[in-house]
Length: 298
Length: 238
Image 1 (spheres, each protein chain N blue to C red):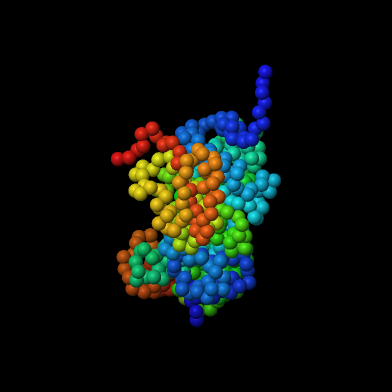
Image 2: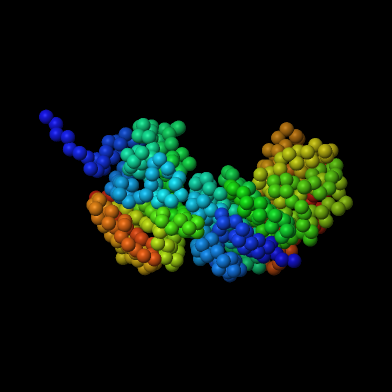
């Protein structure tokens, strides 16, 4: 199976052929893999070199000129390093763009903190107007990329090397009810679905699968909570723990409830090794999730 | 007895328009430093039309040096892009005229600015986007300040634009000697060594400015360093 990043490159390459509005903006990362696209569409594949402020500035300018830019690199360099450009060159100019990251929170587990960005979604959360998708499989990544490219507005597509074994038929903006139960509701985001399903196999909980986290599907959550005797909610997110707690609380303002926000730990993890080892260190492997979720539910 | 002379150039109209906008006196020098450059661009150089501010084939002017925008607003008012009646309300709660301009609030304004160092990157993207759509005639002008060039983001744009020969891109740098640590070798060399065409002119000489803005520069982006009186009587240098 190809990775989400490979699927992104192949799909974006194809989309450039069919949609003259689209342009891809790069800062060296993945540039060699866009070589064929660059040859076919030299004006619409732009590699600015290792210049992330310019990556976003160019995206903003392309949008001002009437194109739909897709800007890509690792999440730390896409969202964190040029954050003022995201705020001003995209948001303040009120233009649309698709930002696509690959690398997630700890795909690059052996590279250390500089290449890990668990805070990316929370950081974007401080700005208005962003749609944020977190697919759990390359097929889902493709659906969401096509959807984002065809639309308008500001979209962040967060790709990962971690994937669920099977794709789901995703509807952008909607949580999927994967199973129903009475003890509470667990929201699994993107690649967290499989570990969550393994963890709650013998627990009587509803599992909602989210590939879009902003806007947050308030309607489906409220329906799920009202259909369950237990109003406890557990979030399992592949980025900073607690990122979406506020979304749940605002969705359930009138419903007494408790929220457990699971995700990547706040402290820097000064260890290398594999993504699976990092997941375990953050308590996001199936066994740890089982313990934490069952310990929380009343 | 009064003798009425036909007015060839409405540059003199700008001062009374600027006088209508009070409250940003801290940036008075910044506003005055740009006045002649803005006037020459809008009066003699830019292909822009207030009746059609979104025309796809228009030249783009991006004010990157967004503080002290009174000269910019005065020029836009004189040229019919904004209603002069808005000027006295400058920076009021509901005024579309802020101490920094906003493209969402004002037709004819290409970018919102205020944080230094954003305009040139946006201009590079704009120039690339126009070229990608086969719009070869529009030029993209960006107005910067010499102190603004402190921001590293400018240099990402300068290096990249020079490397790809982005010749629809024009940078105009108002040099009023306000950069804290100055520029070793001068401002023009920062552009020259990245492959730009560069001219240095008197920022108050309208004919010289016009000639500099329109000088041929085939295959290279073009910078004009417009020198005006130093912001401080004594330049700040350690």
